[in-house]
Amino acid sequence: MNIEQELGRKLKEGVKVNEPMSLHTSWQVGGPADYYLCPADLDELLEIVRYRKKYDLPLYVMGNGTNLLVRDGGIRGMVVNISSAFCYVNREDEALVAGAGTPMTYLARSAAEKGLVGLEFCIGIPGSLGGAIIMNAGSFGGYIGERIQSVKLVTCDAEIINLAGDELSFSYRTSNLLGRGILIEAVLQLKQGDIEESLQMMEHFLSEREKRHPDLPSAGSVFRNMPGQPAGKIIEETGCKGMKIGGAEVSCKHANFIVNTGKATAADIIELIEQVKKMVKEDCGIELQPEVKIIGEES
Ligand SMILES: Cc1cc2nc3c(=O)[nH]c(=O)nc-3n(C[C@H](O)[C@H](O)[C@H](O)COP(=O)(O)OP(=O)(O)OC[C@H]3O[C@@H](n4cnc5c(N)ncnc54)[C@H](O)[C@@H]3O)c2cc1C
Image (tube, rainbow, N blue to C red; front, top):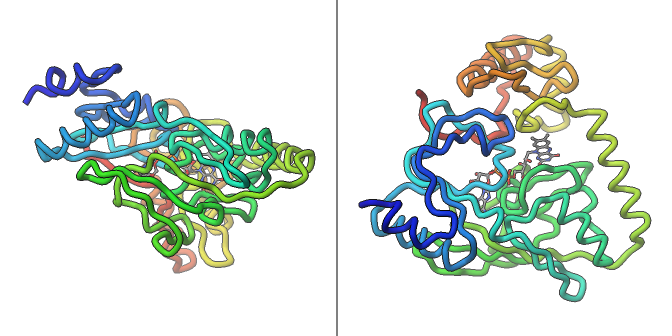
């Protein structure tokens, strides 16, 4: 197998070999992916999926890498990023048909531009629509699963399928779509409403984010909230704010964020996650569960 010759020549952007994942994750850490691919369109994506099947290679699909912690040894096999190929938003009646690579902030603003309301809470979430659907991303009381009418996926056999209604289920920061294939498109059910009010709400949410979130590289909330208890509050009360391992630090601004102060490795972040979990367990008996996806190999 020579992936660059056999597959790379069929792709506009070719195949990147040993691509550092630190360039593609919001934490700015992570070792190399063996093969990093950015298909230019659906045909190229199908080529990649068929190639993967032929050689039985592992394939990991990512969006904007804003909920990923890639270990320092990197990822064996292929990493596919569909963000540039599937970035579009079209209105159909009171619905939007959007590509899974569409950034959430762009999606929220596009909805308002097209005269629809209901995606204000998405503003400022730095992920793509695909990643947001998989994670059932949400904020300020809203979550994306509430708006999804149907999704289109490419399966591991390179078939294109649609799922809707009862076939979709969403709960706190998860959905039944994880591992089902590569999400390429979704239909979001919205409604017509007061656009001025929608824009004001978005400005308010953005300024709240600015107040609450640290500026340094992170992956947003590291741990899942407990019922009725935000993880950040538990971590703060345990006295973990400001705790540091290497270049990783529990943010002093928001205790559920771990920030990369400049030279953090994935190993620093993982060690700090373990340390916070241990202290919280010892202090109040709570087992915190990570919300971020930890993938790849140790170095
Ligand atoms: C500063 C900051 C603030 C944040 N605020 C919030 C917030 O308010 N609310 C919130 O919920 N999250 C928040 N997050 C976390 C993150 O942005 C969300 O979880 C987001 O939905 C992840 O999208 P992504 O495109 O980056 O996905 P990635 O991190 O790239 O991937 C996440 C998961 O989705 C899968 N995936 C991605 N795209 C596809 C696809 N097309 N098909 C199949 N699987 C796919 C990946 O395999 C992985 O399992 C924040 C993160 C940061 C850095």
